[in-house]
Image (cartoon, rainbow, N blue to C red; front, top):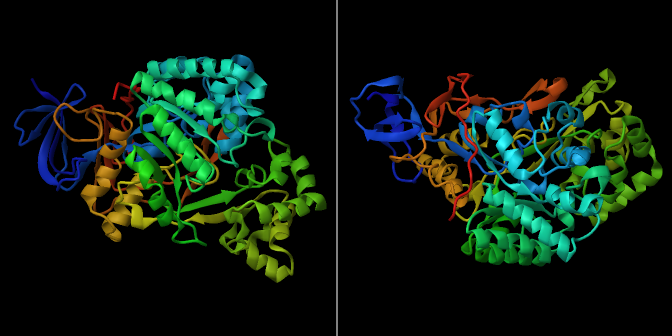
Length: 555
């Protein structure tokens, strides 16, 4: 019987970390049937003589919860060889959700993941109420990529507690109900659950995101579901990435109660303290030894700041009145001397990167009079004007009638850790912050910049880091490696040209209602194969949707 697909004479990097080898790959019924020299015929043959064949890349940290409703190809991740995504991270999402709570869930997603409300309002289908129904709806709808779902704690708490979920901890009775919902979700196939304690994760009407109010006792109860069912993982965004004693103890609690497999945000290399990330990884080693994995971003984090959606200022209490407000209200606030005094005071007490306005510059504006300022830092403009830098930031936005975007260099790539097994590569935030930045191309950026150009790690190790390592962590037992019987997910690329245009993102207006987003195209990604079917050929989609909803299984 003829094979469904034959990939001939490719340089196989199999995801295990062992040296690459040249071989043919035969695919039958969505699985790898043969590896070696294959003489059988096939319905479709790909000549990979000049290409590298790797397992499909697995992105452990995305926010495509809404985008799956309108974009079955999940761009930009699918452009870059990603064949499996894990969504529902950071404790925010769209299920479970009662009909009367849809606006609350939408605004939570707006405030935490910086996706415009109008885009979500036009694009979300609302074909579900419970979390199992959310996964089933995705399965019926179809997708180009494989989908793994974490159950986010914020909508779970709101489903039980209503409007009080972002005001207080749960009672014992409420905790039991929420625990039962988590158990229902994981038993139905969710990969686990997620939560957040980060200060800049705010929810509906500028109140704290509901998951932030969960006590450690609550979290212990929820984590115990994983040990009871012997499956699943936990993703958490703690306040300090594990640096504080409180965060460290919370991570210990989750690891102990769940039986292992907790991942958290994030190992970030700061401009002002360039070795802090290395000290943090050393501090976290006891947690790593117990099954924990902090996440690391493989691209520099450069994001836009738009004071109409001031996500990056959420940690500062003075900015709470700016969220979910019309522009006229925001402009009055930004001009208010009392607000400005409070903002200056917040800058002294809440430590964030925003204090260095040498790293924040004018990116784009609709005001012709301000066009000459594009590319100049806020600190430089402030010095020229003889003004305070923080006041200058607000002044510029007001002068442009808020039609102005700043860019900010937030974090560098911690290249010393790209090959370190103590951390998990990911943190793309694919689907989130769509009009601010796009890090969904981290896989091709890793291969092109850090493997080929800078030779920080070998190709074999880099592929392992973005295939078998996340597959093993999330219990995806048939993904992440090229072996007989495994799912036929492949990223096939030209090693001489693979990469991303991370430093030259494009602006497109292709979201529901013509919404704006930042995208990063891929280079050198010749084919993507999902479950044995070609999804992309030379950067063009084939029209098929071979992805599956992946369901958790016992460890």
